[in-house]
Length: 116
Image (cartoon, rainbow, N blue to C red; front, side):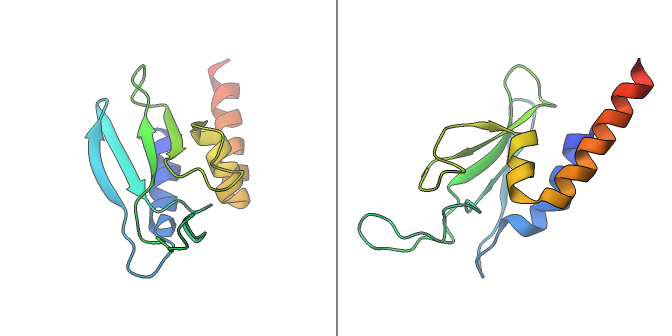
């Protein structure tokens, strides 16, 4: 299990923010992709005034080039955090949970140091 996969497993329970919302998985590009309500914009109303906080509009998916590199994409894009298209897992984790991001960053730096 890679560090990225480890941290994805740590945040999956927190990705379904609304009561009754779920995280769905599917195979994509040789690994598991996670679909869930966007933690940044699912609580915002649509242009028609509806609230769709349980709808799975965001995804953490492995890249086609490497099943170990994940990106975050929100199909709504209603907030500044998700409006600019896909973000790498590193940036998503920094916005989603700063404490876990700091741990992730430390772990990644330690791995790089050992490999040099």
